[in-house]
Image (cartoon, rainbow, N blue to C red; front, side, top):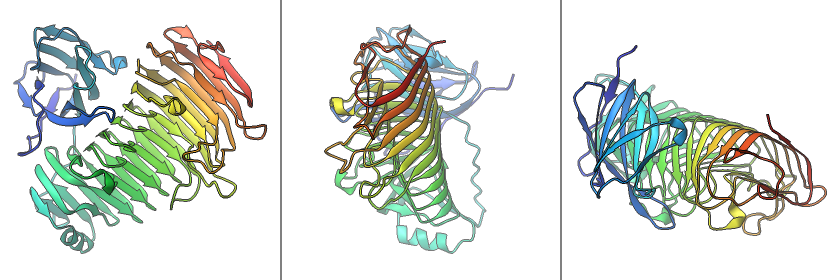
Length: 475
C-alpha cells in the first residue's frame, strides 16, 4: 500500500477567516496540522457566511473538526454517494477519507453555514526560482501593463503567484498565448484572468481568485475565454465573482478540471459556454447563485453551434436556478443553431432552489431561439434532496424574457441510471411548442425516485403536447 501524504498551505496574512469551525488533519499516526478556514459567501436569496478548508492529499487522511458554535446534535457529509461517515463527541466531529474528494460537512442540518472540505490531489507543480522563463511574484500590488510587457518579451512564459495576497491594478490580467499561470496554494488574487484570441494557455494551482470586493456592475468573471483554443484551467477556487466563474465564448478545445467556486449575486453562473466546441469539464465543486453549468449556442457577439461537450465526475449545488441548463440562447434571427453531442456522467447534484417554476429542472433542456438540441446523454447521476424545483424539464418554448423566437426541436435525449432520493415531489415536464417544433426520442432507462421505478405516472412526469416517441425502460 502506498504511503499517505498531506500538503497544507500557509494561511495568507489578511485573508478573511471564518471561526465557526476549527479543523486539523493528519495522516494515520502522524502529526496534526491545522488548516486555515476561509470565509466564503453563499446563496443569493439570503447571503450567508460559510467556511472552506483546502489541502492536498493522497491515501488516507484523518480530520478533526471542532464546531465552535455549539453542541453537535447531528452531522452529515455530502455528497452522500461518497459514503463518508463521522463520529461525534460533543463539539468535535472526526472523519476519515481515503482519497481526494470535495465535501460539504453540515452540522445540525445547517447547509448555509456549513464547512466545505476540499481535499485536492497532490499538486505536482514545482516552482523553479532560477527559471529565466518564469515571473515569480511576491504578495503586493502588481501593475498589469508591466506584467504584460514582461510576458510579451518571453518566448516561453510562466507567471507564478506565490503565497500571500495579490492585487492587480487593472483588476484582471489578459494573458498572451503560450502562457502558464500558476496560483500557488496560499495565494489569494484579488482579480481574474482573460484569454482573448489566444491559444495554449494554462491556469492552474491551489490558490484563490477572490472577487467579492468587486461591484456587481463590473460583471467581471473569474476566467474569461473568448475566441481561443487549447485552454486548460485546473485546481483553483473562485470566491464570489460579479458574473460567471468561467465564460467560454466561441472557443474550442477547453479543459476545466477540479474547479471550485462560490457565488452569491444574480447571473453568477458557474461555467457558461456559447458557440463552443470540444469542452471537457472534469471534477470540481460548483456552488452557484445561478446555473452551475449552462450550454448555449449563439449569444451576443459569440456566433455558432455548440457541440462535443463532456461533464464528468462533478458536484453541482445550485442555490438558485439549474444545476444543468441547456438551450436558451441561439441564432434567433436566422435558421438557428445546433447544440449537440453532450454527455453528462458521474455527477452528484446536491441542491437546487429556484422560486420561479418556469426555471425548474435539475436537468433542463429549454430550446429557444430556433435552436435544435440533439444527442444529449445523462448517465450515472445522483440527485439528493433539494429545496425547490423538479428533476427533468424538457421544453421547446419561447421564453418572453430571453427568446425573440421559439426553439426548433429537442431530439435523441437519453437518461440512464439517474437516481433521486428526497422529498421535493414536483413532477417533471416535457412539452413541445407546435406540430413542427417538437420533443422526440426521449428515453428514461433505469431511473428511480426514492427507490421506486420511474414511470409515466403524473406524480413523476407531466406530458404536454407535441411529444413523440418517449420510452421508459426499467431493468
